[in-house]
Image (cartoon, rainbow, N blue to C red; front, side, top):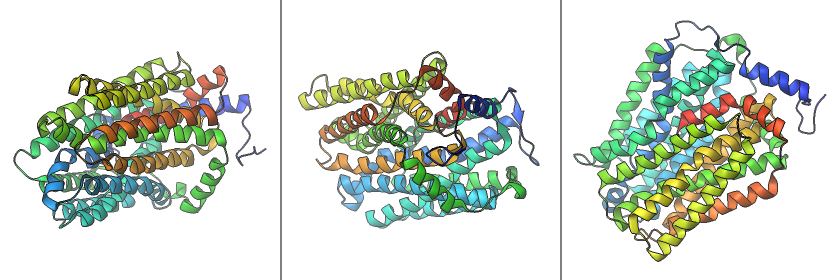
Length: 451
Protein backbone atom coordinates (compact mmCIF):
# COMPACT_ATOMS: atom_id res chain seq x y z
CA UNK A 1 0.00 0.00 0.00
CA UNK A 2 1.32 3.46 -0.95
CA UNK A 3 1.04 6.53 1.27
CA UNK A 4 0.13 10.05 0.13
CA UNK A 5 3.74 10.69 -0.96
CA UNK A 6 3.80 7.71 -3.31
CA UNK A 7 5.99 5.51 -1.10
CA UNK A 8 5.17 2.28 0.68
CA UNK A 9 3.07 3.12 3.74
CA UNK A 10 5.06 2.94 6.95
CA UNK A 11 3.32 1.32 9.91
CA UNK A 12 5.10 1.16 13.28
CA UNK A 13 6.07 -2.44 12.51
CA UNK A 14 7.45 -1.70 9.06
CA UNK A 15 9.27 1.35 10.37
CA UNK A 16 10.91 -0.74 13.04
CA UNK A 17 11.73 -3.39 10.44
CA UNK A 18 13.25 -0.75 8.16
CA UNK A 19 15.26 0.76 11.01
CA UNK A 20 16.69 -2.60 12.01
CA UNK A 21 17.47 -3.39 8.39
CA UNK A 22 19.06 0.03 7.90
CA UNK A 23 21.27 0.01 10.96
CA UNK A 24 21.92 -3.69 10.88
CA UNK A 25 21.50 -6.36 13.53
CA UNK A 26 25.20 -7.12 13.28
CA UNK A 27 27.80 -4.59 14.40
CA UNK A 28 30.26 -5.26 11.59
CA UNK A 29 28.44 -5.95 8.35
CA UNK A 30 30.45 -5.57 5.15
CA UNK A 31 29.97 -6.35 1.49
CA UNK A 32 32.81 -7.79 -0.50
CA UNK A 33 34.48 -6.02 -3.43
CA UNK A 34 37.60 -6.93 -5.38
CA UNK A 35 40.93 -5.53 -4.12
CA UNK A 36 39.40 -3.12 -1.60
CA UNK A 37 42.09 -1.41 0.54
CA UNK A 38 42.20 -1.87 4.31
CA UNK A 39 39.69 0.14 6.33
CA UNK A 40 42.12 2.85 7.39
CA UNK A 41 43.69 3.08 3.95
CA UNK A 42 40.24 3.30 2.42
CA UNK A 43 39.29 5.97 4.98
CA UNK A 44 42.37 8.00 4.02
CA UNK A 45 41.61 7.74 0.30
CA UNK A 46 37.91 8.53 0.63
CA UNK A 47 38.65 11.20 3.24
CA UNK A 48 41.03 12.92 0.84
CA UNK A 49 38.41 12.77 -1.92
CA UNK A 50 35.63 14.05 0.35
CA UNK A 51 37.84 16.85 1.70
CA UNK A 52 37.92 18.45 -1.74
CA UNK A 53 34.78 20.41 -0.76
CA UNK A 54 36.10 22.21 2.33
CA UNK A 55 39.55 22.61 0.78
CA UNK A 56 38.12 24.25 -2.35
CA UNK A 57 36.01 26.60 -0.24
CA UNK A 58 38.25 27.44 2.71
CA UNK A 59 41.81 27.27 1.44
CA UNK A 60 41.76 30.47 -0.61
CA UNK A 61 39.69 32.56 1.83
CA UNK A 62 42.70 34.40 3.35
CA UNK A 63 43.53 35.61 -0.19
CA UNK A 64 40.23 37.46 -0.75
CA UNK A 65 41.73 40.92 -0.11
CA UNK A 66 44.69 40.12 -2.39
CA UNK A 67 42.40 38.98 -5.22
CA UNK A 68 40.37 42.17 -4.82
CA UNK A 69 43.52 44.31 -5.10
CA UNK A 70 45.01 42.45 -8.08
CA UNK A 71 41.86 42.59 -10.19
CA UNK A 72 40.72 46.00 -8.84
CA UNK A 73 37.49 44.23 -7.93
CA UNK A 74 34.94 44.95 -5.24
CA UNK A 75 34.40 42.61 -2.32
CA UNK A 76 31.10 41.54 -3.92
CA UNK A 77 32.85 40.48 -7.13
CA UNK A 78 35.44 38.44 -5.25
CA UNK A 79 32.77 36.79 -3.12
CA UNK A 80 31.01 35.68 -6.30
CA UNK A 81 33.91 33.25 -6.80
CA UNK A 82 32.76 31.51 -3.61
CA UNK A 83 29.11 31.65 -4.65
CA UNK A 84 29.95 30.04 -8.00
CA UNK A 85 31.76 27.18 -6.30
CA UNK A 86 28.81 26.59 -3.96
CA UNK A 87 26.35 26.52 -6.87
CA UNK A 88 28.61 24.06 -8.67
CA UNK A 89 28.75 21.84 -5.59
CA UNK A 90 24.95 22.00 -5.29
CA UNK A 91 24.05 20.99 -8.84
CA UNK A 92 27.02 18.67 -9.21
CA UNK A 93 25.59 16.45 -6.47
CA UNK A 94 22.34 16.05 -8.42
CA UNK A 95 24.28 14.92 -11.48
CA UNK A 96 27.02 12.79 -9.93
CA UNK A 97 24.73 10.54 -7.88
CA UNK A 98 22.52 9.21 -10.71
CA UNK A 99 25.49 8.98 -13.11
CA UNK A 100 27.50 6.86 -10.66
CA UNK A 101 24.46 4.63 -10.07
CA UNK A 102 24.22 4.00 -13.82
CA UNK A 103 27.91 3.79 -14.83
CA UNK A 104 29.57 2.60 -11.63
CA UNK A 105 31.74 4.55 -9.19
CA UNK A 106 35.19 4.45 -10.76
CA UNK A 107 34.74 6.14 -14.15
CA UNK A 108 32.65 9.13 -12.97
CA UNK A 109 35.05 9.65 -10.06
CA UNK A 110 38.14 9.66 -12.29
CA UNK A 111 36.46 12.04 -14.75
CA UNK A 112 35.43 14.32 -11.88
CA UNK A 113 38.95 14.36 -10.44
CA UNK A 114 40.46 15.09 -13.87
CA UNK A 115 38.09 18.01 -14.47
CA UNK A 116 38.77 19.29 -10.94
CA UNK A 117 42.52 19.18 -11.58
CA UNK A 118 42.23 21.09 -14.87
CA UNK A 119 39.79 23.67 -13.43
CA UNK A 120 42.06 24.29 -10.42
CA UNK A 121 45.07 24.83 -12.67
CA UNK A 122 43.13 27.20 -14.92
CA UNK A 123 41.98 29.15 -11.83
CA UNK A 124 45.65 29.82 -11.08
CA UNK A 125 45.99 31.58 -14.44
CA UNK A 126 42.62 33.38 -14.47
CA UNK A 127 43.02 36.84 -16.07
CA UNK A 128 39.96 38.40 -14.45
CA UNK A 129 37.38 37.97 -11.73
CA UNK A 130 34.76 36.99 -14.33
CA UNK A 131 36.87 34.14 -15.66
CA UNK A 132 37.67 33.04 -12.11
CA UNK A 133 33.95 32.91 -11.28
CA UNK A 134 33.26 30.63 -14.27
CA UNK A 135 36.19 28.35 -13.46
CA UNK A 136 35.15 28.14 -9.81
CA UNK A 137 31.72 26.92 -10.90
CA UNK A 138 33.34 24.17 -12.97
CA UNK A 139 35.66 23.33 -10.07
CA UNK A 140 32.66 23.02 -7.73
CA UNK A 141 30.75 20.79 -10.17
CA UNK A 142 33.75 18.49 -10.49
CA UNK A 143 34.41 18.47 -6.75
CA UNK A 144 30.82 17.38 -6.11
CA UNK A 145 31.59 14.07 -7.81
CA UNK A 146 34.10 13.29 -5.07
CA UNK A 147 31.65 14.20 -2.30
CA UNK A 148 28.83 12.03 -3.64
CA UNK A 149 30.79 9.05 -4.93
CA UNK A 150 32.93 8.70 -1.80
CA UNK A 151 29.75 8.33 0.26
CA UNK A 152 28.32 5.89 -2.30
CA UNK A 153 31.47 3.72 -2.11
CA UNK A 154 30.99 3.37 1.64
CA UNK A 155 27.36 2.37 1.14
CA UNK A 156 28.49 -0.21 -1.43
CA UNK A 157 31.00 -1.80 0.96
CA UNK A 158 29.34 -1.48 4.37
CA UNK A 159 25.84 -1.69 5.77
CA UNK A 160 24.16 -0.60 8.95
CA UNK A 161 26.23 -0.09 12.06
CA UNK A 162 29.41 -0.99 10.18
CA UNK A 163 28.71 1.86 7.75
CA UNK A 164 28.00 4.30 10.59
CA UNK A 165 31.28 3.30 12.22
CA UNK A 166 33.14 3.84 8.97
CA UNK A 167 31.61 7.29 8.54
CA UNK A 168 32.78 8.11 12.07
CA UNK A 169 36.27 6.92 11.12
CA UNK A 170 36.09 9.05 8.00
CA UNK A 171 35.24 12.06 10.16
CA UNK A 172 38.70 11.89 11.73
CA UNK A 173 40.19 12.47 8.28
CA UNK A 174 37.72 14.93 6.73
CA UNK A 175 37.04 16.80 9.96
CA UNK A 176 40.56 18.17 9.83
CA UNK A 177 40.08 19.72 6.36
CA UNK A 178 38.05 22.82 7.32
CA UNK A 179 40.38 23.39 10.27
CA UNK A 180 43.63 23.09 8.32
CA UNK A 181 42.54 24.60 4.97
CA UNK A 182 42.58 28.31 5.92
CA UNK A 183 45.77 27.86 7.95
CA UNK A 184 47.46 26.18 4.98
CA UNK A 185 46.19 28.92 2.69
CA UNK A 186 47.43 31.69 4.99
CA UNK A 187 50.87 30.07 5.25
CA UNK A 188 51.07 29.70 1.46
CA UNK A 189 50.39 33.43 1.14
CA UNK A 190 53.55 34.15 3.13
CA UNK A 191 55.68 32.99 0.18
CA UNK A 192 53.36 32.88 -2.85
CA UNK A 193 50.30 34.65 -4.25
CA UNK A 194 46.69 33.52 -4.27
CA UNK A 195 47.42 31.83 -7.60
CA UNK A 196 49.78 29.47 -5.81
CA UNK A 197 46.87 28.27 -3.67
CA UNK A 198 45.08 27.00 -6.77
CA UNK A 199 48.28 25.36 -8.03
CA UNK A 200 48.40 23.44 -4.74
CA UNK A 201 44.75 22.43 -5.22
CA UNK A 202 45.65 21.16 -8.70
CA UNK A 203 48.50 19.12 -7.21
CA UNK A 204 46.02 17.80 -4.65
CA UNK A 205 43.83 16.74 -7.58
CA UNK A 206 46.76 14.80 -9.06
CA UNK A 207 47.28 12.96 -5.76
CA UNK A 208 43.55 12.15 -5.52
CA UNK A 209 43.50 10.90 -9.09
CA UNK A 210 46.49 8.61 -8.61
CA UNK A 211 45.06 7.22 -5.37
CA UNK A 212 41.70 6.51 -7.02
CA UNK A 213 43.31 5.08 -10.15
CA UNK A 214 45.62 2.60 -8.43
CA UNK A 215 43.91 1.86 -5.10
CA UNK A 216 40.16 2.18 -5.53
CA UNK A 217 38.23 -0.49 -7.48
CA UNK A 218 34.71 -0.05 -8.78
CA UNK A 219 32.54 -1.06 -5.82
CA UNK A 220 29.22 -1.17 -7.69
CA UNK A 221 28.79 -4.44 -9.65
CA UNK A 222 27.25 -4.21 -13.11
CA UNK A 223 24.19 -6.19 -12.05
CA UNK A 224 23.36 -3.58 -9.40
CA UNK A 225 23.65 -0.55 -11.66
CA UNK A 226 20.42 1.14 -12.60
CA UNK A 227 19.23 3.49 -15.30
CA UNK A 228 16.68 6.23 -15.04
CA UNK A 229 18.97 8.37 -12.94
CA UNK A 230 18.22 12.08 -13.12
CA UNK A 231 14.60 11.64 -14.29
CA UNK A 232 13.75 9.32 -11.38
CA UNK A 233 15.54 11.62 -8.94
CA UNK A 234 13.56 14.66 -10.12
CA UNK A 235 10.34 12.65 -9.77
CA UNK A 236 11.24 11.85 -6.17
CA UNK A 237 11.97 15.53 -5.55
CA UNK A 238 8.48 16.45 -6.73
CA UNK A 239 6.90 14.12 -4.17
CA UNK A 240 9.17 15.40 -1.41
CA UNK A 241 8.27 19.03 -2.14
CA UNK A 242 4.61 18.16 -1.52
CA UNK A 243 5.37 17.35 2.11
CA UNK A 244 5.13 20.63 4.06
CA UNK A 245 6.97 19.25 7.09
CA UNK A 246 9.86 17.90 5.01
CA UNK A 247 10.20 21.26 3.25
CA UNK A 248 10.11 22.98 6.65
CA UNK A 249 12.96 20.90 8.06
CA UNK A 250 14.90 21.22 4.79
CA UNK A 251 14.57 25.01 4.69
CA UNK A 252 15.32 25.37 8.40
CA UNK A 253 18.51 23.35 7.99
CA UNK A 254 19.39 25.12 4.74
CA UNK A 255 18.92 28.61 6.19
CA UNK A 256 21.00 27.65 9.21
CA UNK A 257 23.66 26.41 6.79
CA UNK A 258 23.44 29.79 5.02
CA UNK A 259 24.52 31.58 8.21
CA UNK A 260 27.81 29.70 7.96
CA UNK A 261 28.44 30.82 4.40
CA UNK A 262 27.53 34.40 5.24
CA UNK A 263 30.33 34.17 7.80
CA UNK A 264 32.70 32.27 5.48
CA UNK A 265 32.22 34.78 2.65
CA UNK A 266 32.58 37.91 4.80
CA UNK A 267 35.18 36.81 7.34
CA UNK A 268 38.28 37.41 5.15
CA UNK A 269 37.36 41.09 4.78
CA UNK A 270 35.84 41.54 8.24
CA UNK A 271 38.78 40.08 10.13
CA UNK A 272 41.64 41.19 7.87
CA UNK A 273 40.34 44.61 6.77
CA UNK A 274 38.01 45.78 9.54
CA UNK A 275 39.87 44.25 12.50
CA UNK A 276 43.27 44.27 10.74
CA UNK A 277 44.47 40.76 11.61
CA UNK A 278 47.14 39.12 9.46
CA UNK A 279 46.32 36.26 7.06
CA UNK A 280 48.10 33.88 9.46
CA UNK A 281 46.00 35.00 12.46
CA UNK A 282 42.88 34.85 10.29
CA UNK A 283 43.62 31.21 9.51
CA UNK A 284 43.87 30.42 13.22
CA UNK A 285 40.62 32.23 14.08
CA UNK A 286 38.77 30.49 11.26
CA UNK A 287 40.11 27.12 12.42
CA UNK A 288 38.85 27.83 15.94
CA UNK A 289 35.26 28.05 14.73
CA UNK A 290 35.69 24.88 12.69
CA UNK A 291 36.81 23.09 15.85
CA UNK A 292 33.65 24.39 17.53
CA UNK A 293 31.45 22.68 14.95
CA UNK A 294 33.29 19.40 15.49
CA UNK A 295 32.90 19.69 19.27
CA UNK A 296 29.18 20.44 19.06
CA UNK A 297 28.79 17.60 16.56
CA UNK A 298 30.48 15.17 18.93
CA UNK A 299 28.28 16.35 21.80
CA UNK A 300 25.23 15.83 19.59
CA UNK A 301 26.40 12.30 18.77
CA UNK A 302 26.72 11.53 22.47
CA UNK A 303 23.26 12.96 23.28
CA UNK A 304 21.39 11.24 20.42
CA UNK A 305 19.47 8.34 21.94
CA UNK A 306 19.35 10.13 25.29
CA UNK A 307 17.63 13.32 24.11
CA UNK A 308 14.99 13.57 21.36
CA UNK A 309 16.25 15.04 18.04
CA UNK A 310 13.62 17.80 18.09
CA UNK A 311 14.79 18.90 21.54
CA UNK A 312 18.39 19.05 20.33
CA UNK A 313 17.25 20.97 17.26
CA UNK A 314 15.42 23.46 19.50
CA UNK A 315 18.63 24.02 21.48
CA UNK A 316 20.71 24.44 18.33
CA UNK A 317 18.24 26.87 16.76
CA UNK A 318 18.01 28.93 19.95
CA UNK A 319 21.80 29.09 20.23
CA UNK A 320 22.16 30.17 16.60
CA UNK A 321 19.54 32.92 16.82
CA UNK A 322 20.81 34.23 20.16
CA UNK A 323 24.43 34.32 19.00
CA UNK A 324 23.50 36.04 15.71
CA UNK A 325 21.46 38.73 17.47
CA UNK A 326 24.24 39.29 20.02
CA UNK A 327 26.73 39.57 17.14
CA UNK A 328 24.53 42.18 15.47
CA UNK A 329 24.40 44.16 18.73
CA UNK A 330 28.16 43.98 19.26
CA UNK A 331 28.99 45.00 15.69
CA UNK A 332 26.45 47.85 15.75
CA UNK A 333 27.73 49.30 19.03
CA UNK A 334 31.41 48.35 18.88
CA UNK A 335 31.22 46.76 22.34
CA UNK A 336 34.07 44.40 23.31
CA UNK A 337 35.76 44.71 19.92
CA UNK A 338 37.22 41.64 18.21
CA UNK A 339 37.07 39.33 21.29
CA UNK A 340 33.31 39.87 21.62
CA UNK A 341 32.77 39.29 17.91
CA UNK A 342 34.78 36.06 17.99
CA UNK A 343 32.84 34.67 20.97
CA UNK A 344 29.49 35.38 19.26
CA UNK A 345 30.76 33.88 16.00
CA UNK A 346 32.05 30.79 17.79
CA UNK A 347 28.66 30.06 19.39
CA UNK A 348 26.70 30.87 16.23
CA UNK A 349 28.89 28.82 13.91
CA UNK A 350 29.28 25.91 16.33
CA UNK A 351 25.49 25.62 16.69
CA UNK A 352 25.49 24.04 13.23
CA UNK A 353 26.84 20.91 14.90
CA UNK A 354 23.48 20.57 16.67
CA UNK A 355 21.18 21.91 13.97
CA UNK A 356 22.24 20.03 10.85
CA UNK A 357 22.25 16.39 12.05
CA UNK A 358 18.89 16.76 13.79
CA UNK A 359 17.19 18.75 11.03
CA UNK A 360 18.32 16.01 8.65
CA UNK A 361 17.17 13.26 11.01
CA UNK A 362 13.67 14.71 11.29
CA UNK A 363 13.41 15.50 7.57
CA UNK A 364 14.29 11.91 6.63
CA UNK A 365 12.28 10.24 9.41
CA UNK A 366 9.29 9.42 7.21
CA UNK A 367 11.30 8.55 4.09
CA UNK A 368 13.31 5.39 4.81
CA UNK A 369 12.54 4.14 1.29
CA UNK A 370 13.64 7.39 -0.38
CA UNK A 371 16.60 8.38 1.78
CA UNK A 372 18.91 8.79 -1.22
CA UNK A 373 16.74 11.29 -3.08
CA UNK A 374 15.83 13.10 0.13
CA UNK A 375 19.49 13.38 1.16
CA UNK A 376 20.44 14.71 -2.28
CA UNK A 377 17.68 17.32 -2.10
CA UNK A 378 18.78 18.40 1.37
CA UNK A 379 22.38 18.78 0.24
CA UNK A 380 21.40 20.75 -2.85
CA UNK A 381 19.17 23.14 -0.88
CA UNK A 382 21.92 23.72 1.67
CA UNK A 383 24.49 24.76 -0.92
CA UNK A 384 21.99 26.83 -2.93
CA UNK A 385 20.87 28.80 0.13
CA UNK A 386 24.51 29.21 1.12
CA UNK A 387 25.26 30.50 -2.38
CA UNK A 388 22.44 33.04 -2.09
CA UNK A 389 23.56 34.28 1.33
CA UNK A 390 27.27 34.57 0.53
CA UNK A 391 27.15 37.62 -1.80
CA UNK A 392 24.63 39.52 0.36
CA UNK A 393 27.27 40.26 2.99
CA UNK A 394 29.16 42.51 0.56
CA UNK A 395 26.30 44.94 -0.08
CA UNK A 396 27.61 47.37 2.55
CA UNK A 397 31.20 47.29 1.34
CA UNK A 398 34.30 45.60 2.70
CA UNK A 399 35.09 48.04 5.51
CA UNK A 400 32.28 47.10 7.88
CA UNK A 401 31.14 43.95 9.67
CA UNK A 402 27.51 45.08 9.85
CA UNK A 403 26.27 43.37 6.64
CA UNK A 404 27.69 40.02 7.80
CA UNK A 405 26.04 40.32 11.21
CA UNK A 406 22.75 41.47 9.67
CA UNK A 407 22.59 38.63 7.13
CA UNK A 408 23.46 36.04 9.79
CA UNK A 409 20.75 37.41 12.09
CA UNK A 410 18.08 37.53 9.37
CA UNK A 411 18.67 34.01 8.03
CA UNK A 412 18.97 32.45 11.50
CA UNK A 413 15.70 34.07 12.60
CA UNK A 414 14.17 32.99 9.28
CA UNK A 415 15.29 29.41 9.95
CA UNK A 416 13.61 29.49 13.35
CA UNK A 417 10.36 30.93 11.94
CA UNK A 418 10.22 28.30 9.17
CA UNK A 419 10.96 25.55 11.66
CA UNK A 420 8.24 26.63 14.09
CA UNK A 421 5.54 27.27 11.47
CA UNK A 422 6.06 24.56 8.85
CA UNK A 423 7.15 21.44 10.72
CA UNK A 424 4.96 19.11 12.71
CA UNK A 425 6.03 17.63 16.04
CA UNK A 426 6.96 13.95 15.99
CA UNK A 427 6.05 11.74 18.99
CA UNK A 428 9.00 11.00 21.27
CA UNK A 429 9.14 7.31 20.37
CA UNK A 430 9.20 8.13 16.65
CA UNK A 431 11.94 10.72 17.22
CA UNK A 432 14.05 8.03 18.84
CA UNK A 433 13.32 5.70 15.92
CA UNK A 434 14.20 8.50 13.50
CA UNK A 435 17.56 8.90 15.19
CA UNK A 436 18.20 5.18 14.73
CA UNK A 437 17.03 5.15 11.12
CA UNK A 438 19.31 8.08 10.21
CA UNK A 439 22.30 7.19 12.39
CA UNK A 440 24.31 6.46 9.27
CA UNK A 441 23.30 9.75 7.63
CA UNK A 442 24.19 11.73 10.75
CA UNK A 443 27.67 10.24 10.84
CA UNK A 444 27.96 10.93 7.12
CA UNK A 445 27.13 14.62 7.63
CA UNK A 446 29.63 14.89 10.44
CA UNK A 447 32.25 13.30 8.22
CA UNK A 448 31.80 16.05 5.65
CA UNK A 449 32.73 18.80 8.08
CA UNK A 450 32.28 22.44 6.99
CA UNK A 451 32.14 22.49 3.23
